[in-house]
Length: 202
Image (cartoon, rainbow, N blue to C red; front, side):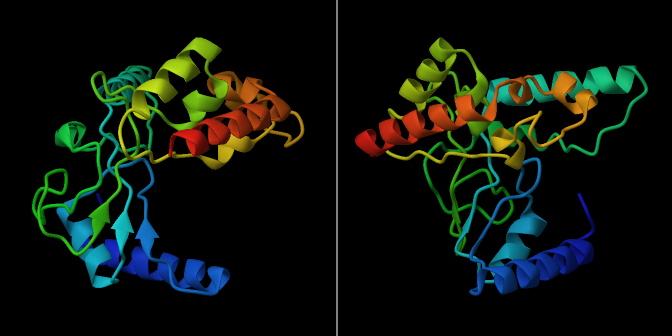
């Protein structure tokens, strides 16, 4: 949502910091909160990035996020979390080259878009938060559905591998993030099983 020049400066600064830390140039990007705009795509191309992974074509996730943001607004609270363009919900589930004016559609960009995984029909979100913290039957349904496609892009947040007690996270955050109530040892065991399953399928 920033002006084009601010997008350019933020990307350049992040590129420099991350490339120095990695010891080699960064070649991919994921925007905070998901979403890809024409301006952002153009700036990523200018940096010669090879891929982007900001498109999350999950209708249920978008609907849940919209409901939470709307509820916050009704209570007079603000959120910096972007909702994104609803057109992204109809983006391909498999890798594609984005269109310069409509990045959620196929085009001829120099960048490959790697959509975050969702199940094919219902487009349920197959992301780390749900695959590590949800009840077993939900985890299995998400994994089975999303891995029917020939491409699986597993997305994590740093908080997905935090332990509320060991990491000393504030109780206010734990109260709002049910996944933080799952102990880290449990999440690590589930992650191991998840990666083993994905390794057998792919």
